[in-house]
Length: 606
Image (tube, rainbow, N blue to C red; front, side):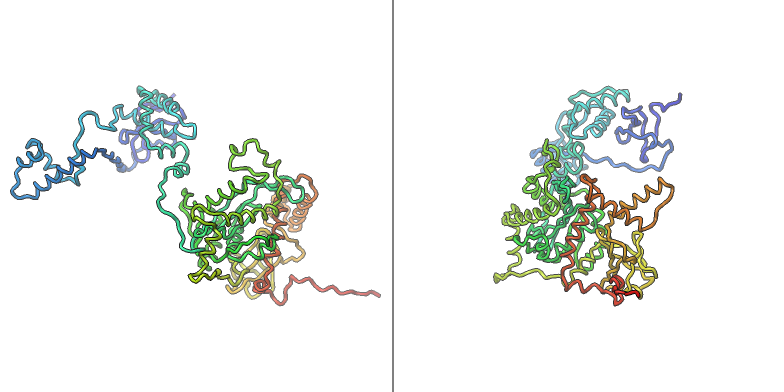
């Protein structure tokens, strides 16, 4: 059978490579004479045609020299400079000054004409130069490839590299180098590069990346950071007390004071709604929130409109609605470069402080990893419900605020108070955003929709209010709450939001998560029966059925329990979110509000 012959030439990345044989990994082992490098290549990447040639630059080798060598080089350079600039200089005098022969002096003058500095006159040492490789270039290339391929993961060792070198040399018909030679090549690689190969980019940067600059803020709210964290503790269901899930927390920290200025706890994974809730929590005073949690025994005086907010590149942080709302309210969004988590170091350390100092002592903790966890039964020990954990977390944050911070040498609370105290000793307070509802809705997730004569269509439902009549055929941004789809909000004039209910007022409320679960059931039923159920009544029937399962089952599935828990949590929070009468009046309601139930009259029949 025909096969690729050893020595066959192919083109890879516009360079000519020679086929050496099949590598142990099943790929083709190729060698480049130009690069003096071996590479394992997929057979599909081999090209036998001559593409357009490109240049290849070989990096220069850094020169090493002692202090004496540098002193001699500088002396030679200075003497040669004086000789060239003098009009009546003689080469014999130069040779005598440098204590060399006249032919050697002429040679140095020639070098000086093209020299860039004293480094060109470093004295060469006799014998083999430091760093010179004595084994053949092809074998050097095989060793380099083997280190790159086999020095990976925490179990990396010299024996694996040596074994692979021997296999590749055998395929290429070369004599394998000694074990000491391979070990020498590994030792010549910098520790940071070895860590990069062994542990990955992030771990290597954590250990060796220089970070001379510090991210400091001149005053409170000038610089803040936001991020999500999966809490290292399992919570239980409110009714069954069975293990449910690990909650998520979205946190915003103020860099000047290290105060946790706002956060949002949720059972559901992070989303645009989590971001909106965290920002609004950070912006407004916390009195209503503390009263709702029945935590009037603690103080949480930290609030204010953020000036800048730093985040990573998660999808929910780059949502269009967030960027528009941030521009509207003069909040500068800063995104950390990909692959550089240390740019968010303050909030990462905060997560570590809350976990190690507080959460890891809770029953049901999962610890930070399986090694720390050991044989601890996290699910078996879990006992806190979401509402109980919410209260516990608020108190833990209060303890953190009143504990001395190592970096600022005082407590975050004291730092906040001193930052808001003027030169005369009077305590000032941050300005309050006037319209709470409008500010909150600006950060809600949104979708673009056109107002039709039938209303607004979204997620398969139709929404209508008489206030939309004047804006038919107009395209608007629709704000919505994924935890409650009974209302949407539109701002057709740019002045105020209009709250729009379901067009069918008999439909009950549901969350986006419940809707998606019901749609999956409908799709599955349609695939089995050959028919697709599309009635919205069927959707709500399935949603109600799922809720009944959660209510009655002793051990319902976690997905269903999480949907029920999210729903109950939202209903509780809604009571204090919409409790402010001054802000709620800003939501425009039409005179002919069809959301108002009709009046019932008693009729007597003869």
